Each structure stands twice: as structure tokens, then as C-alpha cells.
Length: 91
Image (cartoon, rainbow, N blue to C red):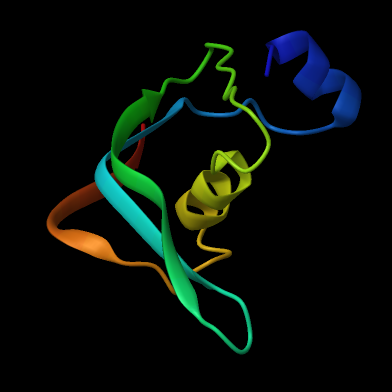
């Protein structure tokens, strides 16, 4: 957020935040009677840097919302590989 915008909104200037993640895997169960498992995310890694615009693109059902739900903590029932790392840093 720019200083000018922060003044207009009466907010203090924000500090930079960086998010990085590695090896995120998500498997979901489909169906109520005949349950099947589908791997939605496998070994996903990436980073979001403060001040940069990032787009998450893919076809319907590719796991875009699932990824954001995992990173924000909204969805906590997911399988992560033992060496998975998700970090949030800010100054």
C-alpha cells in the first residue's frame, strides 16, 4: 500500500510480506457411496512477494482455490509431504 493511500484511509503504512511454500500435496475424496480419491495438488512450490502482482491460472478443477485455502489456513485437512515448508515473513 502506498503512503498516500494509507493516509487517505487513515491506516499506518504496511510492511512488506513474503510468502513461500514447497511440496504441497492435496488429495480429496469424491463421492458418497463409491468413494474415490483424487490428487488435486502434487509437489507444488512457489512464492508471493510483496509489491508484485501474481496470477494463479488454470482450468476449472485444477486446484487454484484449494491452494489458496491451504495457504490462508482456511482448509487444514490436507496431506503435506514430510518436508513441506510454508513460510510467511515480514519486516
